[in-house]
Length: 286
Ligand code: NAP
Image (tube, rainbow, N blue to C red; front, side, top):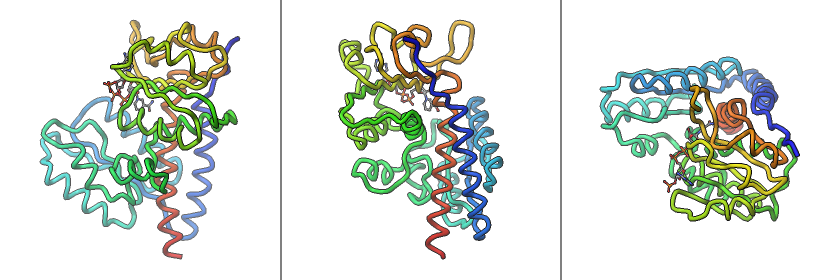
């Protein structure tokens, strides 16, 4: 069997067209979705991510505001900027690009963002909403993975999903989303003994570790669906995921490539969260 690709670029293009149409409809009602992105310091990877987010906003017809600050910005000053953006009616989503410099407490900063504008879904209120099944913003990367499963019409009910990784931004929220869709979920992490024992039982595997070849063909049940969140560099310096793509694609039924898989979906879900935040405001004021 050779797995079919779940193409994150094509799916993103399709979803972003829908986002642009909804944004246009909102603008006609006098509301332009607005995203503020705060970048502190000059981390090269963060600069690329932030540029891509701002570009995606502009292409979708959003208002975007990029605030860049020197790495020496104090925590109180950053909190003041967030407080100002919380009150800014043109802004429906606030994103603080991580990582932050060491002298700043990232969790404190995230908690300063109004939950109504927490389009990254990292606020404890958003995490609690996901946990309890209440409405709230879902973290973009696992939300994008769920959309990819939806795009192939995959019904998770009764399926066994194995998530490798338990970070607050990918692994844990991914597990909760899969649970909400009635999958039976196993979460593996660095303390898991015999990872292959679990992955071989899985109908769906989400790899979110940040290490090459965490998942190889011998660890995958024939016909499983494999989503690769990881972003690593191979020996030639090229971007690659956590999954041994060439091997696993011979066993899986569907697989996401890296690049061109989960990555583009993350920004797409950020646009969707921001749009939905703006739609909420527009509906409240109409
Ligand atoms: P993270 O915070 O470093 O978490 C990694 C997780 O992997 C941890 O839970 C860790 O377990 C677990 N782990 C480490 N070694 C393991 C092993 N040998 N077997 C099983 N589990 C292991 O990373 P993250 O933020 O979740 O990101 C994961 C990857 O996804 C990274 O490559 C990141 O760059 C990528 N990513 C991609 C996107 C995108 O848009 N495509 C977005 C976010 C992240 P412990 O908890 O026990 O330490």
